[in-house]
Image (cartoon, rainbow, N blue to C red; front, side, top):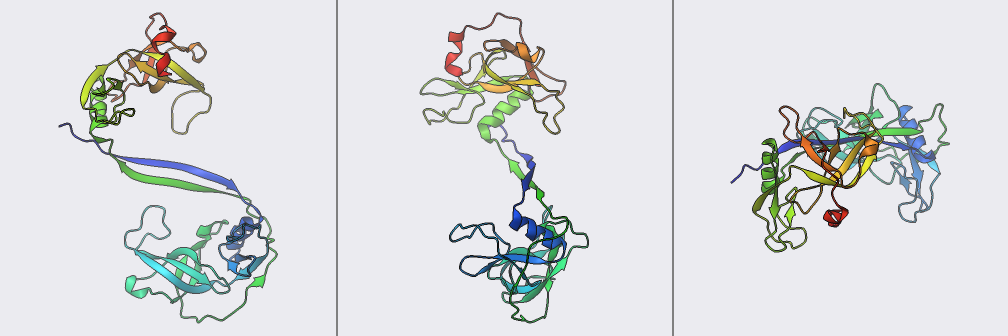
Length: 315
């Protein structure tokens, strides 16, 4: 039995969005140590403010200022903070209904331990020393012995000098990926400069990369078949946008390649030929870099182009 591989993977991208008047006022207010909510159609004060009524979907615009203290409505202890979370030491995630608000705001509570946290406890905002107009301008909440003062939310124009009009929020997912037995065998073969697929016992098609089951028949595929190494370009696209952290000059070509003996095309980069000379039917072969565990790219073999009828079912 081949070893099943695992590898740590990270998916990360910056999400950039513009802000409408409500969100702009809310984030700019945080920069100025002011918490704003919005009044919904039924009179409730929603914090954080939404641009549309959560019940009727009507546009909302009546901003109000609420307090910087509030009451914990529910909580959960976080014993092992992760990268990018508000605090580096264990803390509680809390929903806090700020004074004057009718909904709760999710944030971190700095507390010495879970025994120090309870539903109904009073807390207040700890403002960040440097504020830029983001939710992180609230560094966290901290326990407060102040009782609720019953203050009513005060109308607010939402106007500030130099308002925040857009944000960039980094999104990141760290996880451990296991490709399973079939793809582990495929990756291990690639490390030896071989390409293997798996044959379906029912339809007899050979799938590369293998998934352990036939996508058409739904039955297990456990017979390994070596394919390639040469193949045929079935279709392709020209890439004109340079990817971050990818040291490849644009434009370049990514193509679907039907390896000889395979019944499913895989995709790979085409090199060794000007991008505007890549074409359907082009015969190609893999190029390996020293120590590489998979082909760096495919290049033309110099053979005549494949006849269209030989690969039309794989487009």
